[in-house]
Length: 148
Image (cartoon, rainbow, N blue to C red; front, top):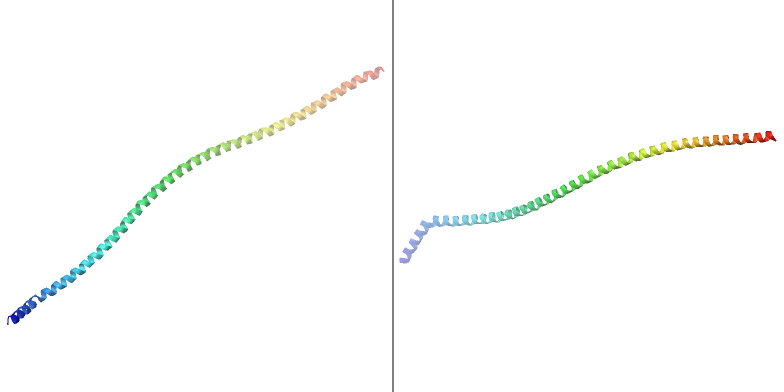
């Protein structure tokens, strides 16, 4: 009888607490599901954090590369300006030299022309002098032939 009473009490308590037990089981499953979701979200957050760290590191190295490239470009710009100015200076010197060369060539042509004129004049004077010498010799011979 005691066993029957205990069984009846147990059934009564089971019936009374059955909805609570079912709710507890349901809450446990929900809690397990929420924990699984939490674990997945935590894993995704870790993956995203690792990606963010890698991207930040890459951005830092890219910024460094940009800085180095800007420094190189600045140096190359300075070199370009230096060589451009040097080339302009040398071009001016070259143009002056070409102008001087042209002037010297012109002076040389004028000097050759003048030398040719002077040479012609000297030939004419030599011929005239020779003619004068020939006339003097001829006139000196004439009195000798008249005396003889």
